[in-house]
Amino acid sequence: MSKTVKNSSRKAAPKAKKTTAAEAKAVVDHIVSEAVAAAELTNAQLIARREAAVPRGVASAAPIYAKYAENAEMWDVEGNRFIDFVGGIGVLNTGHRHPKVIEAAKSQEDHYTHTSFQVVPYEPYIELAERLNALAPGDAPKKTLLVTTGAEAVENAVKIARAATGRPGVIAFTGGYHGRTLLTLGMTGKVSPYKKDVGPFPADIFRAPFPNARDGITVEDAIIGLKNLFLTDAQPSRVAAIIIEPVLGEGGYVPVPFDMMQQLRDICDEHGILLIADEVQAGFGRTGKWFAIEHSGVVPDLITVAKSMAGGYPLAGVIGRADIMDAMEPGGLGGTYGGNPVACAAALAAIEAIEEEGLLARSLSIGETLKSRFAAIGTRSAPYRFWDIRGLGAMVAVEFVTDFDTAKPDAAFTKSVVAHALKRGLLLLSCGMHGNAIRVMVPLTASDAIIDEGLAIFEAAVQAAVAEQA
Image (tube, rainbow, N blue to C red; front, side, top):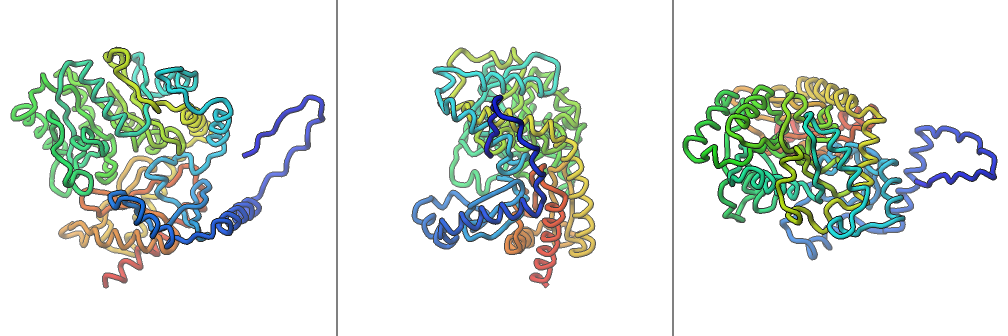
């Protein structure tokens, strides 16, 4: 986006005519066509190059290659248009290339792109830390560490918790996802594909049960399981932290029941354990609150953040009570790229956009639309296959089963829906312990028209998947 430069020696220019939707579309179409013509690449060519250059362990959900993106739309190198219900795995709550975010990043690049905060610090890091401290729930004074990835944030949260408590143990939950480094994999509660063949994992990590309606595990059962863990494996006086996603991400977009979150807070207080809310995927407006844990009224001791915080730029962090965050000695926290100044500038702009554009309320509205439309589509196009429709705000998932009587997870049907949607121009992503849920991470800036178009494609994909199995 070009910036208008003010010049006091000139008369004010007349107010620009507002661009119509048709005119904006024409501009985007022209940009895409020029980009595609200049590239002269095909998806097939890039697939072949990728197979020779990139390890197979780096998987991609879609066999297409991005060329251009705008808000909730994307075009591949061949000029094919897609509606984006994935948002870079929850990174783009403010959409692709939000004007404020792009302008802020470019402006910062005019000054400096990197110094390393550990060598020569800079204001954008401090300003962002101040904003995050003010946004996080709770009245206690807070401090923020900035890093680069969600896994890095989780690792640092564990380090801080151990330093603050003098204890080694960490308790996580079945189905939770906390990263792919060895420490975070130890906390991640799903073997395939993340943990397969790469153990052993660090010691003093324990797993508690998560409520699961299919398996008949209630909140009471989960809490009893946690207390039994204290009796059998995890001595509570040696546990530094309990970490939980307020809404499971890879685990299927399952919200933690509020009464369970409140009981976890009580248990932590009773035993001097720190409560870590992993908000890497659920934070920054995705659920209709800045942080998903706010829905429960519980105040955690530490919060890990990443993904949509910086509107598409790599940035993550740990927000926590000041007394806890100060437990590490100088030099014990940091990283060469942590709190990159361009990413910090982008994050400040993304936060401003969420506030100014009312995206928290927009998230709630989108969530209501998704749930009601999914229910109607299930009844109309795939009776007894949409076993559960769940989520908070616009963090919504639909889970597919073979039938309601057995509630048997149907990963094959889910995979078919995703594939048929892609053929029709809609990007979707599955999740869940059994790979039988589709999660929606559409940008909160997406228009009603785009969401409606995406849902129409989704229904067509469901119908095609049903026909395929008939």
